[in-house]
Image (cartoon, rainbow, N blue to C red):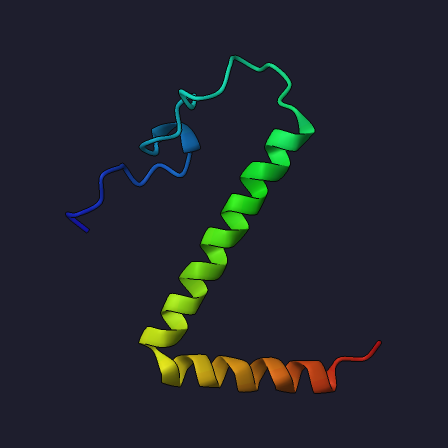
Length: 77
């Protein structure tokens, strides 16, 4: 694919954006509260993206809901 920005090498070091993140210090322990804040933000963004996808693709969302319901009905505790 010509639009890919990285080689076919599966090593993460070759992927763009995998260098050290600029907002974190070099290996210092981050606080538990900061980790929870970042996780909560990520989960909010994920839920927002799922809601947007459900609005944009209603047929796919309905099929996914039905599939999930079937999985839950046939799941053995």
